[in-house]
Length: 333
Image (cartoon, rainbow, N blue to C red; front, side, top):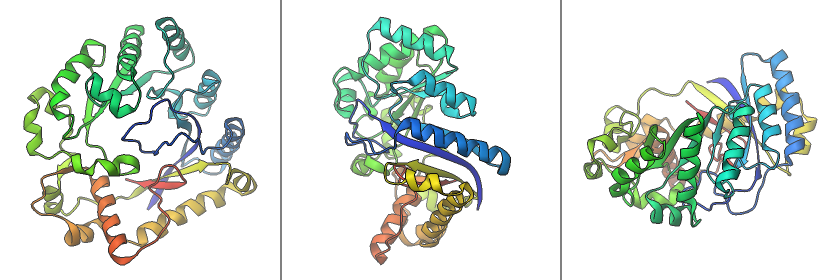
């Protein structure tokens, strides 16, 4: 397993939404370390990597939303160290703004190096607002997206596809295109974070017939295949690379500041190894738990995650979860 990159994050910025589908399971309480302190740590980490581990790419980010009180200074720092977060802004969960305030924000974002903006839509207006837990969110995102497209940003939209919203897709895609969202991607929400609560509305191959061919084309059906198809191909090729995630919190930043960076990397790699060593391979897990008639759609990552949960429950496995993106861990690919 080859470590390719390090992502350092601090989840210190509140999100204005409370979505049913949230990778980070936002509950209204920020767990991240102080931003300024985290940035100083990130700069030292970046400088060390440039000298000692130039083979690793390095990125720094913050959450739960991008509505940082000193956003432009943060963007300048992330661009200075080459972090992807300085060019790409996820716009969900930001505070409502007037048209004038949005225009001013977008103009400043462009000055500070942002090139691409992404927005998440859960369905048409009433459904989206209920799902996101904020009245007016859908209308605000449409206005935000349309203004961004007009100013010249590269704009994209992501839509988690479920049994609940699938019949809204054609109307939603048309609406997004009318507001500048011509790059729309449908995806099947995974079972991590709050996604576990959506399992009963996971979309199936048969459900796709409820959408037009135009809407179906927005879903990458090479990435999202049925459980029976994953069983047929035995889960595909195993991962060979990994990205490390180091999540700074008030509980761990003091200790990490005293550790050599090489030890920090080695510690997270050890967590990754311990986690995946505790489980059989994806192929073996599919042989044990895979439904060879299953028609629901999964990504490889998602089905592997579900099978590991089943195995852990059956055999009483308790191991630190490196896939929980609220804490330090890893992502294999």
